[in-house]
Image (cartoon, rainbow, N blue to C red; front, top):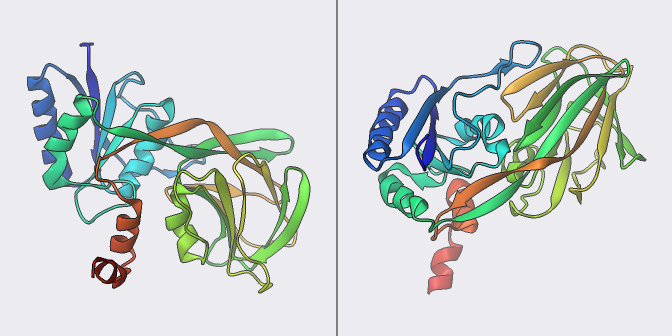
Length: 293
């Protein structure tokens, strides 16, 4: 391997992403930088068919993601969890994670190579499922872990403890456990709060709770969350990771969720503004002009 190396991960089944990856790879090679490139395929189920292997070495200097936030989430689980800093380039509209527009890619990448970009650490969650006293799956995510009923399932009962202290039994369509990074994903749609992405907290947000007083709760990211699916639950219940990989839960399965020892490192451009992204993505209007006036 040369003295410097880069991994390029691009959106699956997206010809513009493949084309840009090839152009960018050639640009790096002209600078004497080794290039490892791969397509981010859809992943599907974790019940035996999921493969998180990557052809990109764990010790590359940088990873560049071409696509959207979903592509970056997959890249984070595959290679970013090893500490490699990631630069997200959005090929469509502005993303929460892929915040670099395509027309700015080369100036920003040049700054990255020269060490001019700050790196922001993001918390990941580690999830383990214990079945009959044995661990049946372990998974890491950047955004969220969701327990959700299938289309035909009735309301489900979820017994929740925080640091071995009883919180409550949620009777609901499901439960979202989100990182601050994931607070603008499913959590936001379900009525949960937006957290600044570097805050050291986790969010538990029930989905359509039967008891109207059940509300989202924010806990320290040092908390260990344990969830048991109650026997009264009927139908198929699915545990999903970052909304991309699914795992079927059984009655009396115990789900353990805690902060991962690994963190994701995301490059932050010099002019990056999280609040500007919020205003743009969520279409908050009016305030900017009034402040300027």
